[in-house]
Image (cartoon, rainbow, N blue to C red; front, side, top):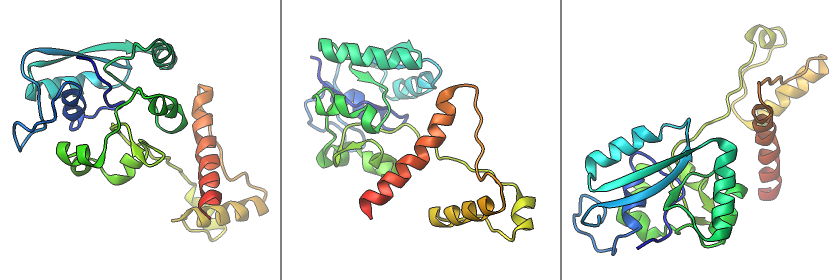
Length: 219
């Protein structure tokens, strides 16, 4: 039996994703999610440089009868594999993907299992993962994936420069904009970002574009 399962996995929530793909939905143990009996193998597509093996090892200590076959991809290979397999109707049981617009086609195309409020309660998803992280895996209010990490943007500032112009570290985005305005008025470029690959600077640019777009939409 092969069904759609969650897109993202985590050390604590991987059991829910893997078990649900073949579970009847009847709780067998109030302390654990429903787990199928017998030896079952699941496929997982994940990026080779990410710590999937640690998660797999931790998962199989608790559920030794549920084996995970991990196929390793590079970043671009991962995108292509999911894109091609979805068109052919041959998706992996579980797979890694990025949230937002990159995941939306697979959510809306019926390839990913929706994690309903009932499933969240049954598998304890809402107890193990902070709400802000879950929001990143939602699409149009519905949850389709389990986030495995949250990586915040970090801004480093030069204290001597702030002291020179009487500035303090901003605590809100509005305060950050005011600091930038002051620095620009002094002929100083507020931000500098370097990276070996183009996606490094792209992520920094995305942060500001997406924040501004969200602020204007909600405002």
